[in-house]
Image 1: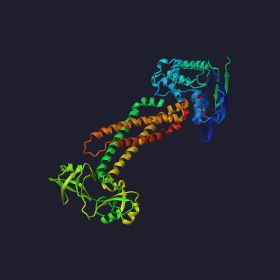
Image 2: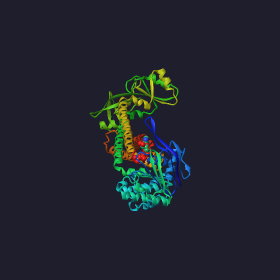
Image 3: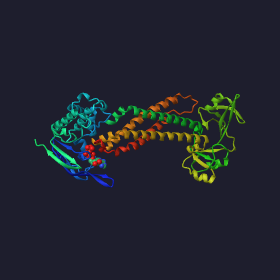
Image 4: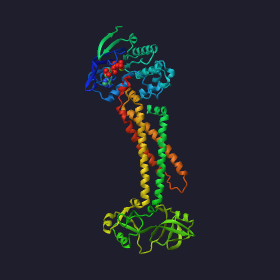
Length: 227
Length: 331
Ligand SMILES: Nc1ncnc2c1ncn2[C@@H]1O[C@H](COP(=O)(O)OP(=O)(O)OP(=O)(O)O)[C@@H](O)[C@H]1O
Ligand SMILES: [Mg+2]
């Protein structure tokens, strides 16, 4: 499934004026490809992800996930859409402290009211990110890189159509950061996911299919890598 | 409660503390309830055992005791439509003596010929059935009742009411009588038996203050549970944001949190009730204490109910957590 943002404008209240965080942004992310979003701090990268994740409704413009427009859907329907079709990897590994690595994945199925098969799915998901042996550890018993891997496995466990990743390597050293990016790229191709990766590290741009640079909420540079 | 159970176990120290507090409050409330019941029995059991459904007092402010009524009033009341039985009763606090020992008692005088000692009075005098006792200027052979009647903390002795004498109250058995109209006409004040208990001075005062204490404990426990869940919900608001971003619906999260509260309250009140029952059973029999299931289970149920209300108000803030806060560290 493809992720399409069409002429999206988002403003935040800023005193008695409004601050434009995204200014007429259009983006087309085909299935099985990675689009990297770069740009200075405050340029609107996280806002772009939040809009794509349906966590914020833009002022104008539309978001289409796999051909379905999200415009006008109510909160419960959006929550279901996120459960089933959107995977989010947070800037910091936002794992739930009370759950083991395997349970972090199982909870996603539970939120959708499913029990059967969730255990096997969780096991397979952790194996994919190379953490099969650490399935019973809680977040405080994992390293930063391992946590980020669990985070990615959790975002992928429901086989989402869209994967949104916000600076997944900001808390990691270069080598483990590169490993995380490789992992994301591999999973994107393998599962045919439309992935948006926000990053500040230009070294991560080698394997991606499209690079978009945001400046002041506008797309300043767009580079597509033809295969 | 997939997340709820795991959080309970993960934060078992914190939750254990709350269970302990709820258990201690339940013990206090349980003991207070048992004591309230016991003291109420020491005040009211004789009046409750009189039979009848209404009590006629001499006037608006009359209590049990005094001699405000006479036979003519009794006759008038007997003639009121729907009144099936009228029994005069004179109540006074006095002394009963036997074999050199004496005991303070409540003297209940009503038409009849027997002197009857309640079990408590007989025990204080150390006499058995058939003993000769003196009550005021009456000396007679007494029967010992199987009932343990008390009035205003004194054991009851029943004596005959001499014909023609004045008395304190009338005990009525009625069916569909217009007692208010009859009161108006006869200048009396009639209460149902349960309302009449409030006119036993010691009962009204004790019961009032014990109930007040219990009420405060109920309120305190609701506040404690509410405060705990307020802090707990704030502490994990980032987790809640993550779950919402993952697609958890708000009703799911509310159910999860309320489920946690229910588990904690059930654990706390069960432990507390069990402890209160153990303490109650260990009390010497001279302490007036009612130890039965309704007396202990009712306050526990109230504690659970109020605790859930407190928790519900606290976890309500889950609805306002913005899933956006899970994304990025800037916000
Ligand atoms: N909730 C909000 N209310 C008001 N203004 C906001 C809010 N969130 C973000 N902004 C503003 O919108 C702009 C874009 O913010 P955003 O978080 O998208 O930037 P970013 O590119 O992710 O920055 P960084 O690289 O520092 O994470 C910034 O100027 C920010 O101050
Ligand atoms: Mg950001």
